[in-house]
Length: 480
Ligand code: 4AD
Ligand code: MG
Picture 1 (cartoon, rainbow, N blue to C red):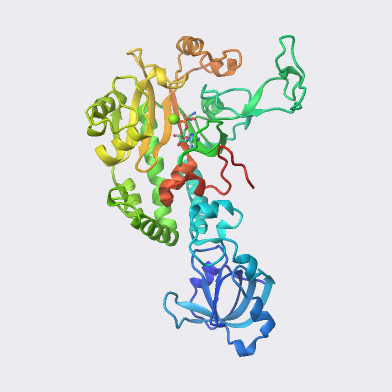
Picture 2 (cartoon, helix red, strand yellow):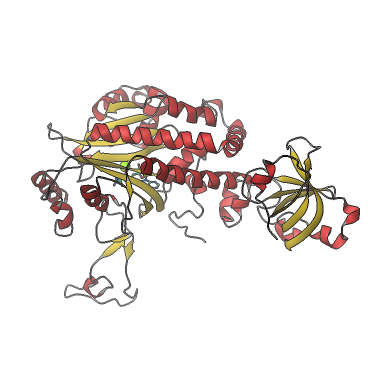
């Protein structure tokens, strides 16, 4: 039997026509009101049954969590909170859910902590919070494609299995088909990867950037949007071992153009969410307010969720050089009073998230783009400035998140790049193809990477990155 999405039914006029919906029971009150949700919207449809007209056996199986099919007349709702409801003429239970077992899960109708929901990640999308987050995640990924496609970029897919370490940080997961016990060894007693599947060492990619650069050198403007993997032992609310990254790469574009692109892109996707996800955002905004009620005043957000998202769209990001930022940090109160875990003493220090968040949340009170970082704390491929000690790097810092984007103008000069790779111990034989780009029509080019989950965190107001991806991978956790 053909059925209609609940989102469509809820937007319909009370036509008195017959409709059929299918979904999962959220609650069944007074043997009369069934609240049903099918995931198409955060809103449930109320289905009203006249219990005298239905078999007791059927009614008994209409329990929280069960899958049902309902047919009835769409009428004006008598109750508050919805405009239409279904006067049930037919109801069938498609899949039962034993109340005794449901009671032990997060499907039971009471408040469950986000930690508890994480333990039952296969069921959590049926909660209001996760339904809303995952619908937003989907809409945001559509907006990402729409933005780039409307602006002349080509979508490309970079390899997931690779022989290179794009960031040069050595945080890779090895990919091998060799046996774990007694693998073949070479003359020096090391594992002999020449006998492995690819006849070399391979790993999961940490970034598609290097391959994206090769395509920008032919297609002009490209972007990737794919999974990336980092074996960094960071157990924080902003790190995943498997996350999705969006990486545009643009030929004939310098760092200023790169900053303009990052800012315009982020504003676009945030606005898209505001325009297209009102119901879910309203729910998440209230959720955040409720959650923050239990926090001390100083830790609560200054703005409600949608106000914060509007603020992003309407205000310029503040662009500040690393050198300026260090001056601000050196002289700021928390640094002088030794409130930071890492005290900023001198130029050259790497910035920790406490520093980034101070700049964004306390000092500038708006998104900040830091640029021109010391060469020593950044990756090998970034373009060296004329001062010989800084590189054309940029990080976009966001309130509550810290770094949301990392990017740079790329070193396009063959000799400079080669020297840098040698100095930093980057294997130039492995990356001959990357060096080749600098030999055949090299040009100024730039790009950046945006961590998709950090964007989803920002837009949904979720505090922990594990709660914006269906099945988070973190140190010690690869369940499901
Ligand atoms: O700053 P990162 O390491 O930059 C790169 O990978 C460059 N190759 C990007 C480029 O220029 N094409 O990572 C980029 C972004 C970060 O700003 C952050 O948002 C996100 O990726 N990110 C993570 N997100 C979740 N979990 C992790 N472990 C992340 N590491 C980085
Ligand atoms: Mg970075």
